[in-house]
Image (spheres, rainbow, N blue to C red):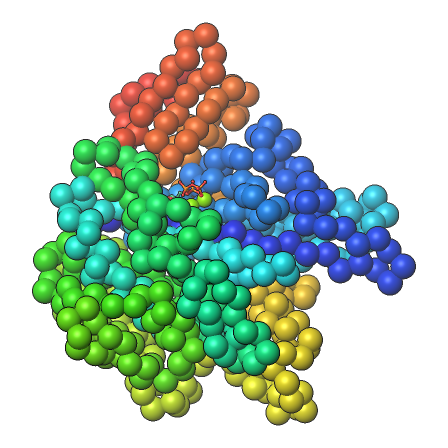
Length: 467
Ligand code: ATP
Ligand code: MG
Ligand code: MG
């Protein structure tokens, strides 16, 4: 089995001013941050030689969309390369600001909610065959996405009781540590809108490939992951679910009766035992659902019949999935406490509370939460946890560094990367998107890479050779 996948990550920007210095906002930071990019590519929306897309999204959120991968270990490396590129840009912005006498320190966070309460984060993209019944796919996938946060949520301080309707604000008078903040902004199971009535599965049909053969599934419910282990389980479990569905596994189709309510309940239950009602009137729990999916996923991993690529990593995904279910059941998290974001974040918060902070809404806890997601080497907590061996890292530093320049070798990203590098070196004016390569000269020559699995493309090679 083969599948193409990619992940988009939006980052948040912040500035802490010197005591007597000026404080600058995200827009101004973003302007500094993107200056080297604009110099390189004459735009703040570019495709890079490693096949990825880097751009400034609405609300001054820098976004990195990885190149297409067909191997989970490539995807983890490409995502880490995005972080590394952001850290490089941040360092340059810091220097530029100091040169301008603004000083202070710029920060970049890979988190899921900004200071104004806007939700952002991470979008997962998976190639699926057009022949697959999309309605059946979403019916089967929804309960998985509703419950997946128990395994891989980023952890968040959220209102203990959430509003179940978009017209009503949640009561924020009582707050708690929950699995994910993302659940509270999901208002539909499936729809094509992404802003007002955000759906758990986005039905927008932009395949970035041959539309007769393929569709791209756009999942917007997941949290950004700091831990590469959490990331592996988040993406790996979703890919295995798609493999199972495409292989016709008989996963019950009786979906959840109240997915919008349930996703909020699951976010608030660290025991995985909250009762969820199915459309046929029977009930289940997040633990029950995830254990059933795990058993099925284990079988296709044992048979080598999956699209994760790397077999060793596939085995790790099943192993971590299994250990996490046992940890939740027993409430003993010592076997996963270097691998799962919400577990690591909760441990840090609990330690602070033991040192005398009594209120979870205390500003120090809020700062700790942000520091967990801070990718800035000088101030970020997570890089320190990794360096100290307290957070497991699946992506060696060399692999991340290499992925900053080198696209995945086994997808069309390899062709795109080669074209970009050659056209840029030859100082040619060109335009690129996920499918097309185009020279903006009188010839106007363009090539469409409609097959995302193809690593060679005769017309593209001719185009590149002519540069
Ligand atoms: P936007 O975020 O601007 O609304 P978008 O959802 O199309 O647009 P991009 O930020 O351009 O997203 O990122 C697209 C993502 O989809 C990338 O991570 C890329 O690797 C992935 N991708 C590209 N082609 C395919 C495909 N055919 N199937 C699955 N994923 C793909
Ligand atoms: Mg995007
Ligand atoms: Mg997107």
